[in-house]
Image (cartoon, rainbow, N blue to C red; front, side, top):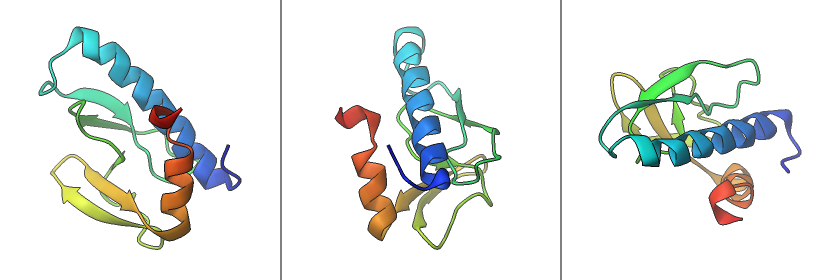
Length: 99
């Protein structure tokens, strides 16, 4: 489990989103938007993001943390971010898809 409270928040919401995706697999095609929890590192954030199931590491615009991640895709509704450095290592280590 991540050590930093922000990392724990990201890992928890990623796990929740993975479960939402699992349920959505049985209910909706890949191109139908679903609601996911924002995966930013703000431990107070509980906002939702509308995105297709194929999208991972989604955050709302303005919720990205340029100190540990960079934007790889931008839409009107959400951003897709990729972690860098130690944050990338921690995110990969805590990825529920890897267990």
